[in-house]
Image 1 (cartoon, rainbow, N blue to C red):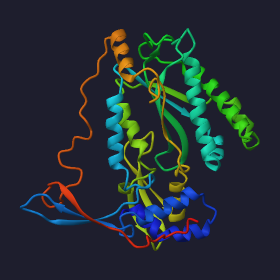
Image 2 (image 1 turned 180 degrees about the horizontal axis):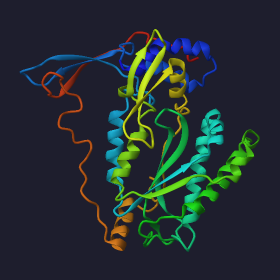
Image 3 (image 1 turned 30 degrees about the vertical axis):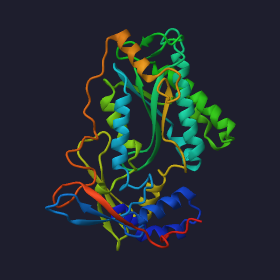
Image 4 (image 1 turned 90 degrees about the vertical axis):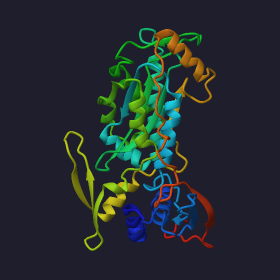
Amino acid sequence: MGAIAELCRAFGPEYLTRFPHLPLAHRQALDAISACRSGDLGSTLYRCTDPACGHSHFVHRSCGNRHCPQCQNHKTRAWLAAQLDRKLPGPHFLITFTVPEPLREVLRRHPRVGYEALFAASSKALKTLARDPRLLGSDLPGFTGVLHTWGRALPFHPHVHYLVPGGALSPDRSRWLPARPHFFLPVRALSPIYRALFREAMRREGLLPDIDPSVWHTDWVVHCEPAGDGANALKYLARYVFRVAISDHRVVAVSPGERTVTFRYQPRDAKGHRTMTLDVFEFLRRFLQHVLPTGFVKVRHFGFLHPNCAVPLAETRRLVTEATGATLAPEESPLAPDRPLLYCADCGAALVLVRRFFPAFPPRLLDTG
């Protein structure tokens, strides 16, 4: 069992008693992570396929919760492989939309509304500016957005990263309109459009009275940087698609007697790592504030990258090559491991499933009713 699972198991019931009005998604995450790979969810028996070894291995079942630090690594690798396969040739850009600090508490209290507004306002701002004939002059750009809610020391910092191919399809869908070298869209023009769209979304939801009016008169940070052919940017974004706010390997020490947790982080503008020690309840609070609302989709594709776009991706790729001469470089699949996904710890050979064992009544550490 991982360090964070042990924390949830040891202190989760007390935390829930202290804070009985936690959102259901937070309660469910605590319950799932507490039981993950503990044996409470059952076990699976595997056998080594190497005749010279033939050892049997019992593996405790995992919870599968998307916020569990023990359950997401293989999903990250699979997602990255799929996105590299969909990537277009040519230059890409990484565009990040943030919200001012005074607005973050409103999003923390209303995460589903806030995150939807963040996606809707930022994507519409990109589409609006792309239509300007002085820029791209296209009604069909394409981009992939990933929601990210934390900073390195686990503060609440919601923002969206977009990976954007450097161009768009012409209005008649017959040509690729390349962006200028090292320039996609002006962020100074994006920022006020994004801010106005976000304000309108808050007005529709009746949340304007909860927001400091000064945020509508400040500059909102939108950042754009060239991202090469996009491969490295995809690998960067893959860290946030299925990774949770903190992984087990960053937990340096847990002191049950002193009720503290020490973890490692890297300051944004400094080299090397530092450690931070928090009260266990404060650590759980920081961890749980990044739990997403049930069913919320944190990765979204827009424009010609949307799965339902009428223009096939293969056709868009052909138009890019025809217009720019750019072609895709061969990529090594991140799913080409040196050994099988399930392998024998003794000899490294593949494992085969023998039998699954399920508990008659799966225990619930926490009451999520």
